[in-house]
Length: 206
Image (tube, rainbow, N blue to C red; front, side):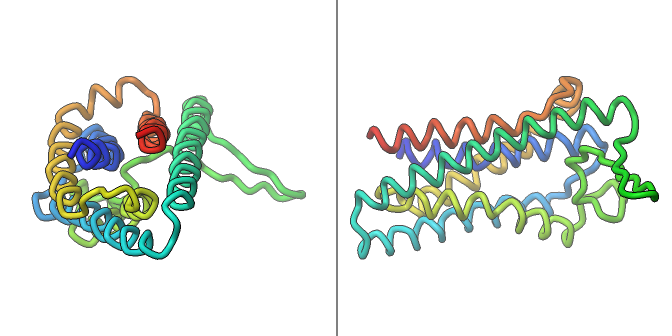
């Protein structure tokens, strides 16, 4: 059961950070919208774990272990690298506008590190439609993680249940801690990447 809990916590890190960003931007997350985000993420994890477990019956376990380790590590490194880039761009954007010039004509590209981009209509409320779009984007990590770990006898049902619990807690606590996290002025999404790498190592050694 420990593996299921750890996995659920890992995929909820991004949800926590997203909720914190919305709170710092004074964007409300209605109950139904929050439920959509949490449910999509949890079901994506559970179904991908189930599918991965099915595939492991046809693929040698050692190949699954190596593939899972490589994929999880790659996702973790990519997430950390993206966080570093976002921190760099955040610092540069605070100094003003970032511009890209080509030829004789100037093309100005404004880059704002906005974690609240899901609020398409700028209504300061995450609508159901916007929540679905956010959930679909966020579920990609859950699917990839599930496919990379399902071979290791991780229970899909228990994982889905814990993912619902940790996802709900992530939104609640993220909303409460939003302004404090925003005041740090750092992108913390690297935490999710570091957690994935640690989990990959843990899975490979266990």
